Amino acid sequence: MSTTKAEDLWRGTSDTGSAIRARAATSPAQRLEWLEESLLLAQASGALARDRARRQRQAEEWASSR
Image (cartoon, rainbow, N blue to C red):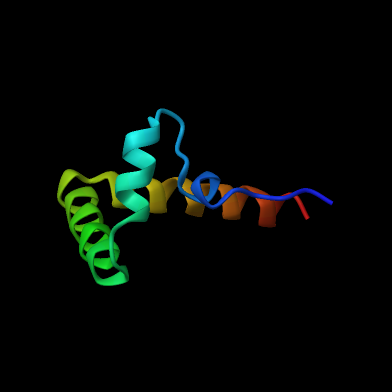
């Protein structure tokens, strides 16, 4: 049976130990605020629309292959 360290739950592709610990020390409200800001930035930059379009194309390709 594998075990997962608590800090591994917060690990990203380029996170340092200090970044992981800082994120783990935030409250749920702070994490939600960060998430909201990130989503607003992604929306403003067009990243959300591009991702939705990509996912839609994938869904359509999958549906047409069945």
